[in-house]
Image (cartoon, one colour):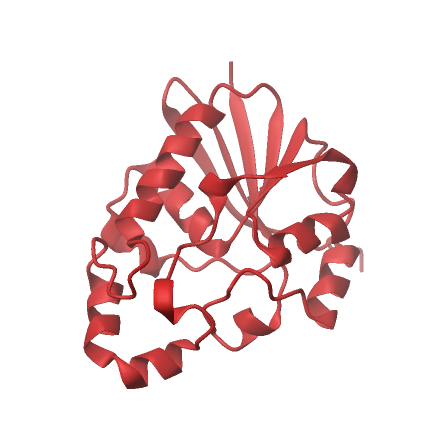
Length: 197
């Protein structure tokens, strides 16, 4: 059996625009909600829809018209826990704690904020992907960008040190298909309908 998981990155919100460590409760902004609504109907029909627990992921799924298929939020697909940095911008944290931020960005096993390390996040997503291979049909998962990064690293067998070198744009689809522990990858398809001009 071939398993198919399409990861959708959420639409924009104020936290993303400000490079702020989101607390999971920041809603989509007006532009993000409108862009997600405009992309409704551009995705293949799924057997199930899953989300990260954050407001922006759940609101993106709703704006994409996926509410009728929406299952519960999946804790394994939650955003990286940044501990005491939650709610602060990267600039603020970098000014107050330059050395810890530097270590965090270069050492995947480091968690100076008291939360979760990048390595722990990648391990969590890898475990979830192992179970996802047993799901029948297409799964759409509206998830935080760091979940997409971790899934790509696992699918390609890349080192966790490459985590911060992967950019995930808002409202893009990253598709994994695989069987027997091997994944193939299709990166960053925009959700907006193509221009017909």
